[in-house]
Image (cartoon, rainbow, N blue to C red):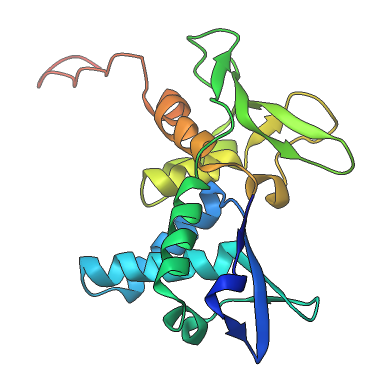
Length: 218
């Protein structure tokens, strides 16, 4: 979480002076949603980058007004931002994707997630109620039904989002990650699941069966 002083820029929102701007981190799922929306709206690489930038400003930045209230940026306010403040906000949202730690695989390094669960220690623990945190997750699908959404997703990003939903906290009573927990999975941890875990489910280590030769006996 980063807080920027806005008082020097004479920035107003709804007629109220803006004192500061707080930039919150963005999770993997939220970033995917932002980029998907930008892809649909953008007609050029420049438009895509601009749409992602604006969507992240709207999602991640909260303004503290002189009245004590808070506000959010809209397109009109973004367009009117002082260039220096815009640059500082861009730097803050870019750095917000950095992880506090690095995820790692625990347990059997050859676990495939089907015959044996894949045990992951998150680089950025998920915050629960009170002081509770989820910092270790197991991924295992013993039946096709449990991983059907993973294998039928349109692309690898969709597959890893589906994979997150079958993750089970190692401690506690949850049998799967609820949506509020999935939404907290950081960019760094999401990329780790994409590169280090997803393939273990989808890549079958068994050799492919050879097709029967013509005329071979059944």
